Image 1 (spheres, rainbow, N blue to C red):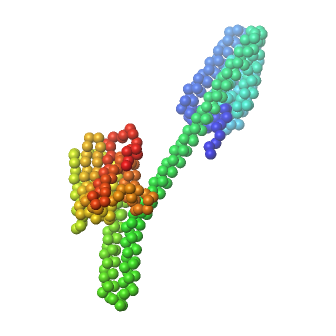
Image 2 (cartoon, rainbow, N blue to C red):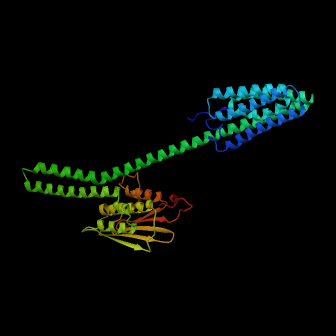
Image 3 (cartoon, rainbow, N blue to C red):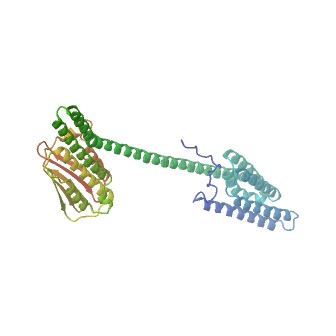
Length: 413
């Protein structure tokens, strides 16, 4: 919930003075200059029209007092509201006495109208503006005699000026409220995205742990329980179960180390180029039953860190699928650097699979491919998978070197 916009005349902190609003200084400067110009012109007019009159000392003294009060009000800045209102009352009182003594000072009311709107709540400001307008009309009639224009013009000008000022203030208040809403929405959206990212990463980690570490621990438990049951009756079988459990534990330890390595890949952190990181990955993933080769096509190009990290993780995930599910003897990592995009292909000669069966929500494991798609989509690329039972698998991740004007989600398949 945001606070309601302030009423006209009840400016938020900083709107009265130039320090709070970058556009307020020029309006304040014009208002102050207009007041002193009108005050000086009124004094000169009075002295020229009434030489030698006994009122002159009083008018000059009151003009000086009014100027000093106005300067004092400018120096108050963001003082307490009560002090500013007291100051405005003193300024208006001195001005009223001046208008009674010399009606030519009536036009000093124009900057006082805006000062009232800045200082008072809107209803109090309207009432004070009405009083100022009455004095202006009375002063003009005393100077020039009765004239319908003199009766209608000052209230009309005051009404229009007040309406414009109040409208602009309320528009500014609505804009500030809208900006506050937009900023709050952006913060909430960022927080939501962080939460969603955290949940997605937790889901990925839970699936990885379930498919690797948890399965290995479950196998160890069953083997050790079986060994315990036949330990006395068949020691040879029990020892075989224990040795098998040791082998499972060794594979689980290797998987845990790989899992930690995937969470924070050190290769790119050390500034190693993507091609070298992929070559090192191929060497690590090669075993006695699986040979992984790396090929680089085209001259290597500098890629953003997010893109390099995403492609390396896609390669790690694809090779993990090859090792766990494909039953392949060879696999190939191919990094192709073209003029406008870079392509990473992971191909194997394994048993292949039915792509439709890996879609989430259909009961299969199939968690690796959606994670790869999400990674490549996050960097503006696309992922394609080609496979069929008995024909191996090719996973291809393509990332443009420059942002594409169309959304990559429409090309994802």
